[in-house]
Amino acid sequence: MKKNKGFVFCRDAGILIIASLARCISVYVFTVPNQFAPGGVTGIASILYNTPLEVSVGLTIFVLNIPLLVLAYFKMNKSFALKTAFVIALLSVGVELFERAGLPQYTTGSGGGADKMLAAVFGGLFTGVSLALTFKVNASSGGTDVIGALIQKRYSATNVAWFILALDSVVVIVGGIVLKQFEPVMYSFVSMFVGSKVSETIARGFTTAVTYTVITEKPDELSKKIIERVHRGVTLIPCVGAYTGAQKTMLQCVVRRRQVTDFHRLLKELDKNAFAFAMPATEVLGRGFTIPLIDEDGKPDKDKK
Image (cartoon, rainbow, N blue to C red; front, side, top):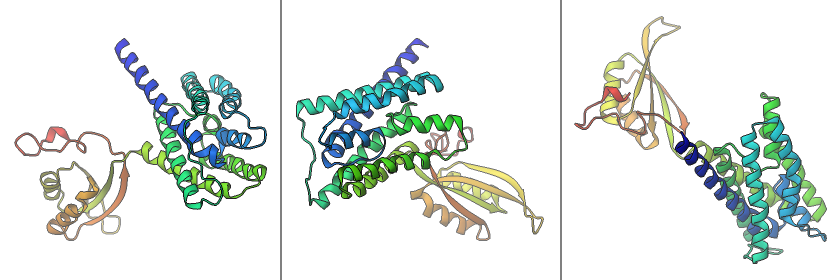
């Protein structure tokens, strides 16, 4: 147990460090120098830095997150609050160290439309990676993510994603008003969109598949051939047609996208009258999908279903 806890602790710490580094790159290299304000505390920090006051980005991120961390500690899981505090501390210190070290920034100045688009895309990409990694270990990077988590706990039916988007949008628009430049506002929304899509993709997993539901009168023959030729598991469910009252079998099977053509060919060959439809599936887990349903002799292994 101690070894397992030690491994989990080291793994989570490593993931949070990588997530913090990715967010530092996003903020220091792409967001702040191009006057983007992609919502949340980071957006506010970027706005304050790009005013005549030039308030420290790292300091702003740290100070504005303190009350949110206190709320998270007392109102939510303490582990979540501590991990989030760790990320915020690394982010604040990391941005300051990047600035003091004089690391290069991707700044385009005015009139660099294409380059600004690249800055928005890559800034969102690094942010998305950071968000996905922190969510994987039950943490966040602070700001509106903490607010969203608090609201989700209090009102579980609330659509938190839209609430967070509204808060972030307010920050983006205020940034345009304060800085008197509306071009960065549009690029900020691009950065937010890219970040959300990257985070969603990583969180769901890159393994994509298709779930087939087939109503057939030849369940035994069809399932046997699917296992032998497509090497996918099959679930058989007895069913009754509401209109005809006929007893049939519903077959469910998850196949990889590259196996869709083989599956279609098999259906046409064995049961042309079968009724089938498909739905996309992501992050497919469990034995019978990642491990082929065949034994060492190349025969179907019923124990692996």
